[in-house]
Image (cartoon, rainbow, N blue to C red; front, side):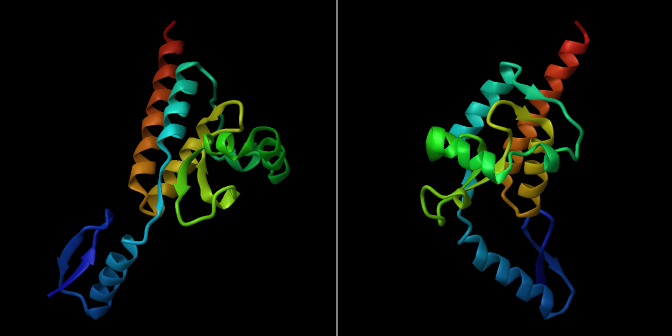
Length: 155
């Protein structure tokens, strides 16, 4: 009997060959090294922005066009510092050095507004890389954004 992981990373019995077992063992050993976690202060700020209606409800795939350029990110960091830059990212990687852009991931906005497309992208990528706390936070933001849209449509 061998084990493999299901879509949530849990062990599942199967009758496959050793490749399934070795995949699961590799996953177990790498899970202890996962250092990307939810940036709780950023999540709180994002919820506050959504509640304040600082939201761009753009197309699903618009983030590649809407996301700030590297130049705009650098200017933002020059003006406001990494502490403020961090507040626009749902993920934080403790293995990366402080005061580097690599330390922060899963952006949700453009330094002014929350972009629905950015939150969708963050949710998708977080799920893909098994950062479930970030995935759940992004899903929560999406529900908030969609609920506000539905509420405003009824007014």
